[in-house]
Image (cartoon, rainbow, N blue to C red; front, side, top):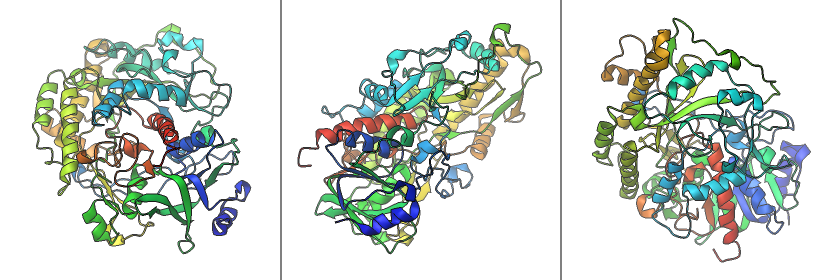
Length: 590
């Protein structure tokens, strides 16, 4: 029997992409974004399992650039002068990989070793750098730059990348063939700063100066994203996509996830159930995965009771541990004399629509602030772990944050954990990013809305709620000042425009930081964290949700701590690893 109401919804929404949607599948995946389509591809490729991916966004017509975002505004951010901000996440097949800036980064090796520490020492499943590198290599194909770019000392190493694919059905990390020659003076000046390194490859997991890629097809110059890599052209009879459809909650048979309740977008009265014979996989992202869990009765019991949602599992960490990178839009200077460009760099490389290759730096706190890093680390380490978390945070979540606090305080003193990331564009202006913020926010359903899935969750970034993040941002500004006014660049007599004169003391700079910081680089993570349950975790190392069976989470919400880079490449690797974990348990009673 077919779910005919669902089929009719498909006919109305995208008649060029009709599929007969069944009543049940082996795997039902909620979310057709970066993770969801990757997992769907991998689980269906053998032909052994049937897979349905359900996505709220539309499947855009072929050849049309997707650009749809959810319309969500954050709660006022008290640490940033009570301002509100847009919560920009993709609402389209392909998810945020369809709408992001296409900057492709992996973060640092230590990021993933920290994930391993926060797993509680589970010997069966490892999330360390060595293990994750295997999945980075599997999930992403690197395209090398043209030889003409060699004059820029563009370093890359194919050992950190996967085999050469001959098909377009993969995700590409591509070096553009144009490099701005005005970046050269910054490169030479930065690499001479005390402690600065030059990374052998942007995917090596090492800190320092590095040229990084974009998620671009080397064949067409078009965006390479989860739809092009893991859906378009596959045409498998056992792999279905249902777009423009809302999942309102997970359905349970006792303690086992048995399926999901759905309805066509905008037609709430026409709900039906699609059943999952093996597993329901939540891949709706760090904003909507916790919402679906909470509305399914899995989350903080007091919140669910206030919303009138029957409690299935009291899991206090759902929606907590929310993190995103914060940034300052511009720390800006002007030149008195522009740095000259060496003649051998004024070469023209044919721009074959692959765009530019960008230069960036990723540096540890002792390099950012050689005089103050020990003080900052000691002050942070001495904090009561509950002091800057939301009032009433459950003791298990506090315990997990204490573990993170101990690790971060240790890494603030170390040499392999980044606290600043910035692009060197060639202009005397920078966008410094606090790449490992210590503040933690929440994504929680609105109790006043009850179980209404149409009401977006309350997204509270709580950026700069912990003053340590402001301290780090202040030191980042000082670092950029040193880069511009000492060493190789001192001779060009730069004048600071922003923050500018009058912002010399730490107090003045801190006020400027709070007035100018943006709480999101569109990298939300952490709201269904992969940590032990007694540390406020939501999923175990195998990504199964605590307290129920047959329900897993595969998206950025599982990251216990954010990585030192854009998050999409990491999500692809997480999805590849998750697919292996799911296949391993496929034949057992889960």
